[in-house]
Amino acid sequence: MHAQAYLSITDEIAAAIADKQAVVALESTIITHGMPYPQNLEMARGVETVVREAGAIPATIAIMGGQLKVGLTDQDLEELARSGGSAEKASRRDVAALLVSGAMAGTTVATTMQIAALAGIKIFATGGIGGVHRGAEESFDVSADLEELSRTPVTVVCAGAKSILDIAKTLEVLETKGVPVIGYGTDSFPAFWARESGHGVDHRVDDPTALARLIAIQSELGNGGMLVANPIPEADAYAPEEIESYITKALEDASLAGVSRKGLTPFLLQRIFELTGGRSLEANIALVRNNARVAAEAAVALAQITG
Ligand code: PSU
Image (cartoon, rainbow, N blue to C red):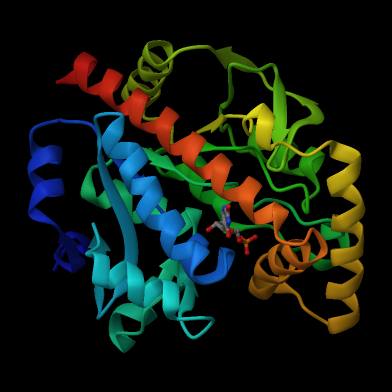
């Protein structure tokens, strides 16, 4: 049996892929582990609407009932959103075990890329990718998202890397692995809640058509994935110093609580949510919607080139 045998793709998405129409993959760890209920459910529905309004078909991906689901019903979204920590967080190495157990899992950037590629989807929107955690020289905590970007031919539109990470080291690893990092309308690599991280990008594009041409050529070259860094909208952004103070505190709390590995990112996001009185979540939702729009516009332009 081929890996495709485990895919469960909705009719609408399967037809769009076969027809080379615009499709945008969306992840689900952000639903199960990235945001509290009910904002996570509103976000998941809202992001799908943003993709549709831009003329593309949304394909939210999760692992449920022993299947790699591409396209979720509203009931699926609700189940994931209400799972409140009981759902698994699926990285690449968990996929086989989850297909056997049938457990419900949100898919990380790495796993969503893997499943999107199996389904034939080339563009994916998320909030921020995982990366090299601060203190990785001791802990070796490096997200599997980076390895996946180097091997899987999917373009990920994100708002940079969460500034809970070591961004300089994250960019170094992406360079070593040959992953293009493209600024969308910016020369600066953004830091999720903030528009700038103090680090640059290698290349920049300013419109969906230019981005679609890059995606098409990267795919022809057979060069693995690509990272598009799209800064959070100005109106929703934090000043880097302000968010840094919350991150420092959240990292101290994680260390005191002994949280590490796959629990670390969800813990930090939740702690920063509490420390900012919920404002970090509004910013997070705004940046995900902004990424979904750019990904959808690029998917529409790509369909015009390749369709
Ligand atoms: N973007 C968000 N919120 C999230 C994530 C991305 O706005 O929760 C998730 C993604 O699924 C990403 C994961 O793959 O955080 C990173 O987890 P880790 O650092 O454990 O690899």
